[in-house]
Image (cartoon, rainbow, N blue to C red; front, side, top):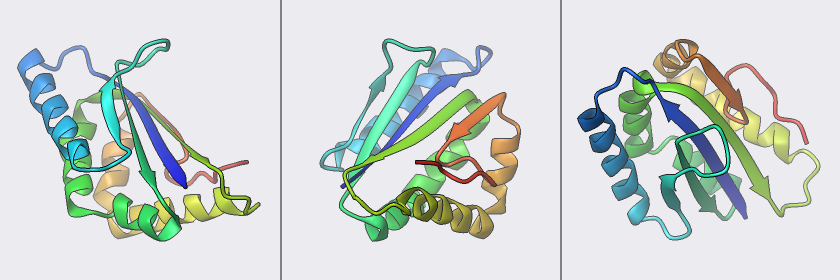
Length: 136
C-alpha cells in the first residue's frame, strides 16, 4: 500500500471565494476515492492536506496522471504559495523511493506545463518535486 500525502498553503492574496471553490472541488474529488481524505491541516505550517491511498505503483502512476488530478493541479497550483508532498508505504522494496520519483519524472516529462506552474511556487518540496530523487 502507498499513501500519497500533500500539504499546502494558499497565497494570502487569493480571494476567499476562490479558495472555497478550489477546496470544495478537491474535497469532491476525494469523496469518490476510498481511503482518501482532504481537509484542513493542523499541527504544522500548512493550511490544507490530503492523503490518497493506492495498492501499488501501477495504481499510483494512474492516480498521478488521471485527467481529474491533472486538472486540479492546473487550477490549484497557481493559487498555492507552499507545497510539500511525501509518500508512506509498507512495501519492503529498497528501490521504492526511486520508483516513486521516476513516476513523478515521467509525469513532468509528459506535462511540462506542470513544471512551469511548480517553478512559480515559493516552496515545493518532497516526493513530487521535479528533478529531485526521493530518498529512503
